[in-house]
Length: 348
Ligand SMILES: [Zn+2]
Ligand SMILES: [Zn+2]
Image 1 (cartoon, protein in one colour):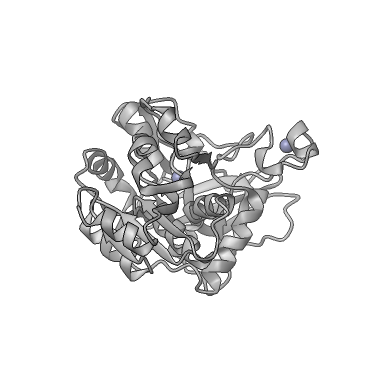
Image 2 (cartoon, protein in one colour):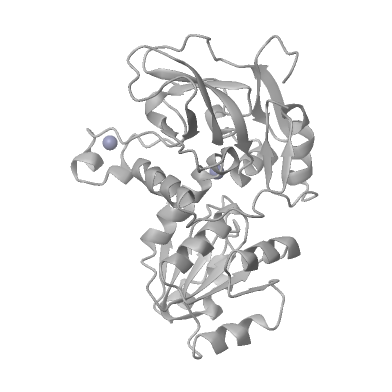
């Protein structure tokens, strides 16, 4: 924010409450840390969920999809220099807990989506942020700053699609063409899915999904959906359904679209209780699978997929706003008055 002497950051402090706080970003970072000037920060639906409900949200997660440039490094920082363009990752696994010892680094007992244990008092809805150098990844020249802010949601999609064991020739259904859905759709396609059918209420997003490679895209109430799915899959139904819309109700509504022995993959993490009838799953012997965020090494692959043009981002971001506009933008998205995918540019 130009002309602002005090570095500020926005954090969620209660239901429908976004508060400007003083950013904790010393000009000289502490040992092992870097100070990053934020270029772009994405607004995640989990931010909006926390804002609507006012649940205690780790301040460092309030703005966790970001990219920027290193402006200072502390002592004991290797492989990073001032001027490097970077994106945030998650914390590397600790390497020393029972899950790490068992070879399950992705399920490390000290897994953190934020930048604990040395987190600042805010996330990247800020001009600057100080983070551990180990939670940054350098961006090659052919990955844009905007793409850098999409690395984190792309890693969420990557982790889930890999876990889903999608196979060549599969027909998959994708519920919700937000940013994670659009990446999951492309990754399923790249993994060999021959048909990828998208369910998405927003017409613009359906158009983006089709442009990025979806076979077909339907509004949820469209009566052509089921016959098209059955026609494309030889009458079987979908092999895999990816839930990316944040709808717990998908646990039930998607059953009719899945083939016997099919798999529902929850990429989103709805927080509201839902009623389920497990017999509807067992009668089809469905697999219900969940996916938790990402692992540190997956960010390297995702950046490479951007660099090689395997993951495309055309049309994914629709609006760039200034930091000062954030309270209004949050209010609009929370009220469903804004279906755009927004990046915040604190330099504006
Ligand atoms: Zn997120
Ligand atoms: Zn560990």
